[in-house]
Image 1 (cartoon, rainbow, N blue to C red):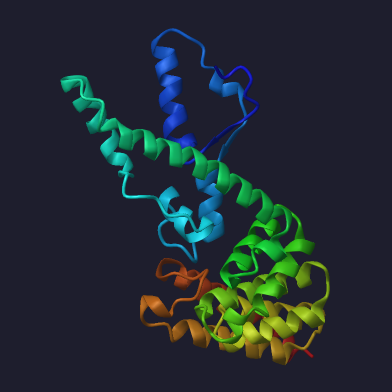
Image 2 (cartoon, rainbow, N blue to C red):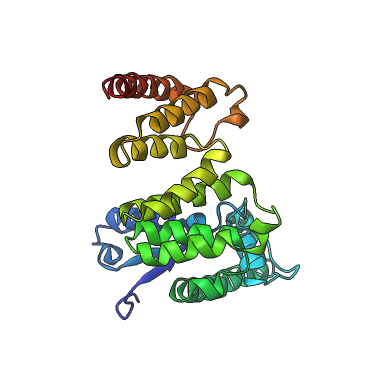
Length: 278
């Protein structure tokens, strides 16, 4: 029945359904046809796109939060399906299976609708994804990882200018992470003036990596060692002031805190030597 299929679309199928089906084929001594068909698992993309906005990325929750659809009371939780099926095998009463058929039908329809929405979102992210700044930032990270830095930069900028950000509706760590990522794109393009402005914004919010990038710029590009020393010392002070786990910025955790301090202190000693030799 899979002969005419060009691809498989699933929700967590790569980790669960496909390995299970492949095992069943092997158990019966058959070669699994599933291994030769391209597979799109929407769960992985859903996690990347909505991890910062939607805590639970179950298919039914994405139906509500993303597609705006609501299931009727006829639906049942997926975990109940096996028990209802086994009850049917025992008593032969197929009436309770109506809810199973409804559940599976909506799953398939939702999967198709979600695939279509994701395709539109990736085709026109600035328009389709413009409702939430967190979605724009997630799309920006995705395009950046795919090597499309032009689209990523536009998405970061659009997200930073979004009403959510202007009204402080988004947690500061998400905003500062986007600021720093956009700065790094400018750095790779050697647009240092734009990068510096963004690093300054991030550093003002205690972003340690922004401090380090400013120190690097003033040491290696501007040759202004006193400025490089200032930003290095400031980074050390910020790390030393970290107390609670909630104070730790992205990229720094208690287990690598000492590594950061060691690297920064080494940088500081090198800068002080350079500065004294001028």
